[in-house]
Image 1 (cartoon, rainbow, N blue to C red):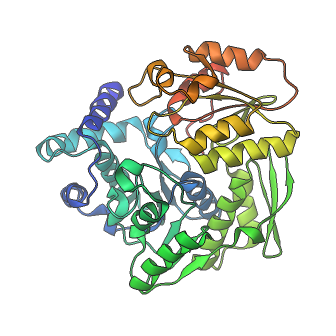
Image 2 (cartoon, rainbow, N blue to C red; image 1 turned 180 degrees about the vertical axis):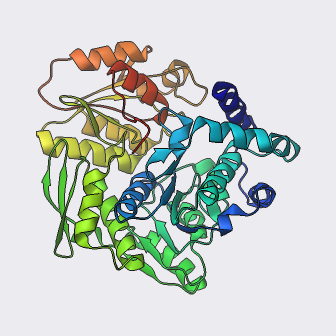
Image 3 (cartoon, rainbow, N blue to C red; image 1 turned 120 degrees about the vertical axis):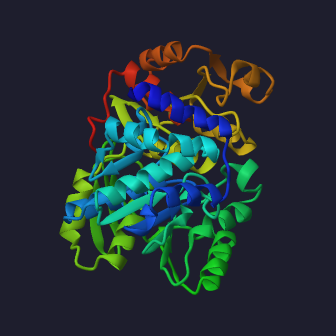
Length: 414
């Protein structure tokens, strides 16, 4: 029954992405306005939303709160998107909600993300969460999650993303993300580039609120290993049980937000929460010196390759599978400059860069192409190299990667 329900939900993707709040307000009204019955923290940005949201959720959970977490996309199972205290929504809950509202979905052409958002908010209300940590799906201003009245908003790092929908410049993209900033509600951001700060400041003033700007230069990495990260910020030291220098910024963003809103939570409780935190698909060690990361834009790929170089003192060998709308000139430059060797592969998906796409792009023809992802994984695993190797580029290949390495990242609780 869950398979047919998910098949139905996934086919709602065929309705495309509808930017706007009209539909989500209709379905939430049908559900009894659940989004008005729990507190929330709302995140927008390009990189780090999921990690930051999950860190906040884990720390608050450790402090004794009942915490909802809504993130996207999922890596293996739809259920991952909606969690309470780390545990995923059950198949029965998905089935029952979809069955109850299916006629409404059809009558009003509700999209996949609108249906999923309504499901999450209904589930959080039903289970009386103390707070929900919610990341936007796309943009911010017109994202379905932007019906919330949060106690705090967060803008994570901004980069080029979904330019066909959000705008061709970083400034335009920033303006869309800033649409989540609410009147008199505090906002926190990790962005410090002047052109981005100018936009955020404009929205902050318009909404009669203040933005707390975290200076990345004040985050010091004490030690970075393949499976841990030791950082220092404002004279406080924290340890994350996961690699990736970008996680230091995400952690500080989460910690600063918590300290503003939950003054009773101590530094020791924060560290206990960090000790329990795990977020898959982010510089995740799959085997010895082989990593998997969902980095798919220039800043994410740049930091990933740089981190691996600094740990191993050697450029990584990369295996990339990317969505066809993500290839930009600066990413191709990164492929050339920051990898010892790069292999491109593909999977059957209309959204993924195909052999035909690669053959029609002369810049991509400089790299080795292997059509079968399994063969490409075999090659990178068995390649003799005393430096790091990394598989990256898309959430879409998670199932293939985890199956290949016989790795189960999620036993139903994160």
